Image 1 (cartoon, one colour):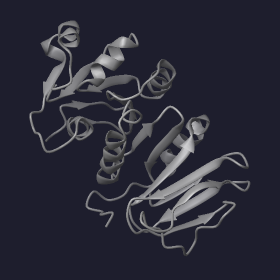
Image 2: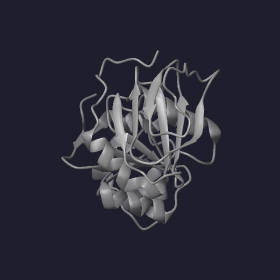
Image 3: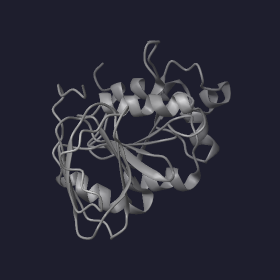
Image 4: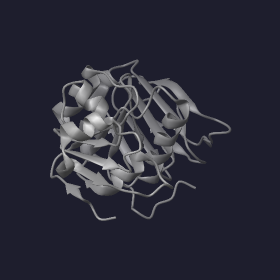
Length: 230
């Protein structure tokens, strides 16, 4: 699918999961265009925000939201073999996308969102859970955070991740979701430098490192579109 909605700056994408006004407003300060994935429109409207566009098969979009938004804001994608997150990402394009409301509530929805991140590793897609910022680690990244800041790494497939500036060095370790993982690591002081051999590692940092993460992403390379996690 070609992009139905493209912007030259960031897009906030809202889903129908757990969401509060602080998380939504934090995203909109960085990514001012608001798109909803299906029932995420109801979540946005409940917090006083009107999406510019709603994308999905509309199986979870309320009649009240349809009426409030009007048909010109609705972009229907009828496929049933992908999630609302997938449908929305397939129809939008921006330098980065801040996704909110895709975690919390049902665990299967949260896991599906992580799967979507890995399958879109060639794009800058960041999930804000309200407590953490989560994204696929780029091939290389240097992150300037205060000492003791939590840096969690979770593999979505076999992957190696060299590091400098962590309390527990990860260089040379074989990570695997069914084996070694890297949650609850921390910055030891100075910049944290990370480098992965494939797009299969999730990076999670606290939301208080919002600005530091985006500064790091601006300088980080992207994965190639044909890169594979496995």
